[in-house]
Length: 128
Image (cartoon, rainbow, N blue to C red):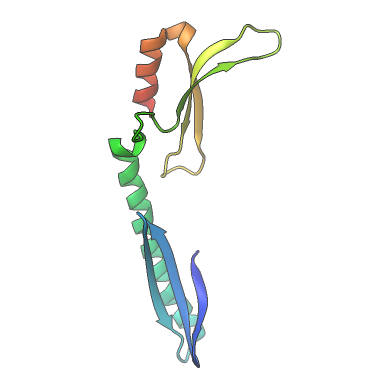
């Protein structure tokens, strides 16, 4: 929640603040007779901001530009060698996918030895 007490001279406000897309969004709710009523209104504004912030994250996650960086690398994809005790080293693509509509970050690997380099890469890109 992004609701803060704000004082301007003798006037009291609730400041509702969130940022997305490189822009700051804020509104002020004046506290008049009822602090509880003003806080309820601030919560409604915060819920609206949260919905817009989540929608922006979803829109970003669905765009290709979000996943491909300027240098040509793909966000959340890296090639690593997994070394475990008692096993041979395994060459894999590791995926770290931050899905905005889920609480946890998804992590998985795709084996290059099993699928071959091109097919493993193709599967990785499809998952992302």
